[in-house]
Amino acid sequence: MEQKLEVHTLVVALGSNIGDKYENIADAISLIDSNIGKVVKKSSIFKNPAQGFDSENEFLNACLICKTSLNPFQILDKLQKIEMQLGRTKTKNSYEDRVIDLDIIFFDMEVIYTEKLQIPHAKYQNRDFVLIPLLELYDFQDPKTFLNISQLIR
Image (cartoon, rainbow, N blue to C red; front, side, top):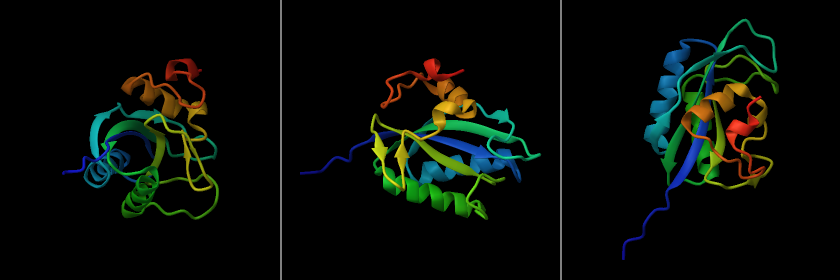
């Protein structure tokens, strides 16, 4: 008897503020599609100033929906490998310019809170650069607060 893989809905936020930012986002989407699961929907790309740190480099941000059979910890590991593959380096423990930043925002309607991983993403609801592309994809409901994205946008 053949075992069917469970398919999950994954939402990822993408950001880039150094290098060829459009290419960085396109490459990340392609690598997510080939290493994590089928990318089924992408938001537009939005320009935003850096938040949480000073930078002269404007960010490009987007979100995507992916269908995957991986679990959240496998996804986190693969997203971090994609970031490194695209040239991301972390030189300090605070926010800084980056070639690519990939964050899990939602995984189905699951709530996960560990030292290594928080789903929904711990700070997404305070970030218009995540909320606006999310709303373009779908008016998701937060599994912790039960508020829709349209209710969270300032």
